[in-house]
Length: 141
Image (cartoon, rainbow, N blue to C red; front, side, top):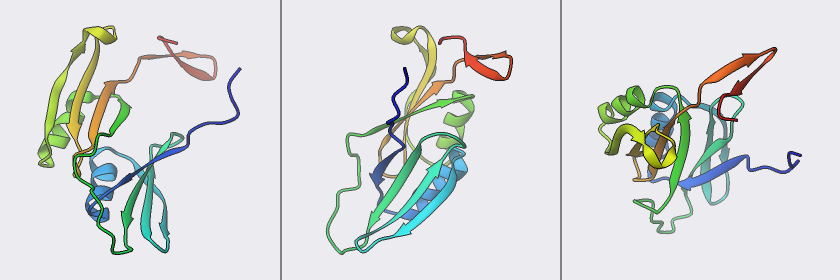
């Protein structure tokens, strides 16, 4: 039985809210869903439709924050890891692992890149889906 509780978003601190919002929306194809101006930070929520969100957080309280190269990985299922890797590279960002089959994961295509603050972005080839009546289901499910 599926739990009624679930993770809806993950927040990451970013050094430049405008630059990161542009990357996650223009390059990764996420849509901005909400923004918040809190006492100590500004936040932008981005998501792929019907999916979990990434909360971009930029502190405005004057405190020093380390936004660069933190040990965080965001994992995305994507339709075209090769094309998306090319868009990330064209945006001037680092590619850590070119798209290639990962034997330890059943041969699925995986790529690794870094976002503007150095967070690792893992791109996994989305599993093929098969239409079954009114629902598409993963052939891996």
